[in-house]
Image (tube, rainbow, N blue to C red; front, side):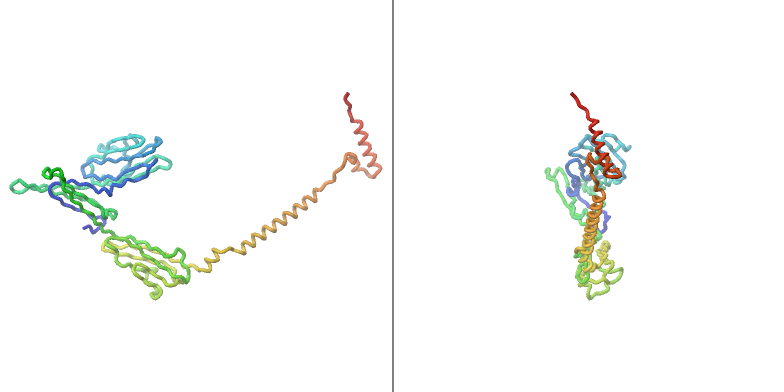
Length: 358
C-alpha cells in the first residue's frame, strides 16, 4: 500500500517477468482535424521509446518534437539536439515520429509536439520510464531457478485505481503465459472546494456552504472557521457534516469563511468570502429607474421644441421678395414715375436686344 504522494512502489514476481503498463494510462490526446495527436509511452529503463505525432489534415505546416526541458529534438526531418540516442523514424506532412534508445530515468517527463499554425497548436505525451531490476537465484542442485524483479516508479493521485500487469512466459507453460494483476491504491492529500447555495446571499435569508473534499483516505470531518477564529454565533451557524448552515443572514456575517479537511496524508483548505446584500438595494437595481426615464423623456421633448422653434425662425428670416422682369430696375427708383420709366426702359432695352434669324 502506498502512503505518500511520491511513494515508491515495489513488486516482486517469480519465474521470469514481462511488464506491461496499464492501457488506461495510454490515452490518445487531441482531436481530429488540423490538430496534433500524441500518445503516452511507457518503456523499461534501457529500452527504446517511440514518440509519434500525427495530424489528420495538414496544409504543409511544420511539426516539431521538444523534450521536457523545452529543447527542440526534431523540426520536421531536421535534427536539432545532438544526442545519438535520438533518431528519426518517419517525417511527413501528416506524421513526425522519433525514437529514443537506451532510455534512462532522466528521460522521463512530458514531451511536446507542436504544429506551427496560427496560433501554434500543441499536444503532450508523457514518457514513463520503469526502473526494473532482475535477480536470479538457483538452488543447491542447480535444477531450479528463481527470478525476482523490482519495479520502481513515481505515482500521483491520477494513478489511483490503475492496473499494473505482470506476465510470465516460459516454455513449460505451453504458450499460455501466467498473468498477475495489481490495482494501485494511491493515498493523497485532500482537495477542497466551498460551494454556496446561492450566488447572491441576501439579508434575512438562509445560506448553506458545502465543503466538498476529495482525498484518499476519505478526509475526516471538516473544520469551519470565520476570519481565522471560531464561528461567532453557534445558535445561528449550525455545522452538519460538511455543511455550514446560516439560518438567517445579517450584515455581521460578512467575512472570510474557511473549510479545512484532513486525512492521514495531509491537510488542505479553501476559503469563501461572504458579502451579505441588502434585498431592497438588489430590488432597486433590478427594477426600472423611473427618475432616469423621466429625465430622458424631458430632455427629448425640450430638444424637439427647440429644434422646431429654431427651424421656424430660420424660415421666417429667409423669406425673400421675388420680382418680375417688369419690376427689375425699379426697385431702387426714388418715386413711382421713375420706377415706371426704368421698367419701360428695361423693356425697350429688351426689345433692342432681340435678334431675328431668317
